[in-house]
Image 1 (cartoon, rainbow, N blue to C red):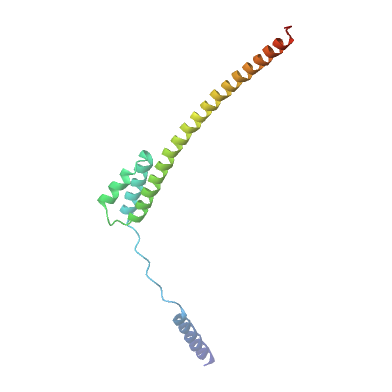
Image 2 (cartoon, one colour; image 1 turned 30 degrees about the vertical axis):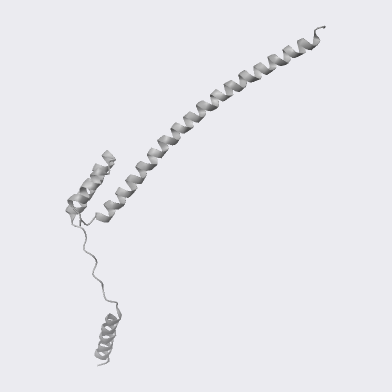
Length: 131
């Protein structure tokens, strides 16, 4: 009898514990395998070319696609990267031009220093000459 009472109490306790568990929420549906494959192929094509037009085409083909937000982010980053590359090209060209200008100025400075030394030498010779 005590055995059955103990089993009844244990069953009541366990069934009460299940009421304390939080409700399980439904997870958002996973993207179908084909969507993931399409997205992976899109990424491969973009990485091979580096052209954001590939991503723009995806948005045109699938305006409400599962990966729309990711593709839009990739487009923004790709354009920002291209802008940085263009800026870098201009900065490198400017640095080269600056180095060339510095080299020219250093050469002029050297020539002027030589001219000053020659003038000093001539002035000393002129002062040492009897009048």
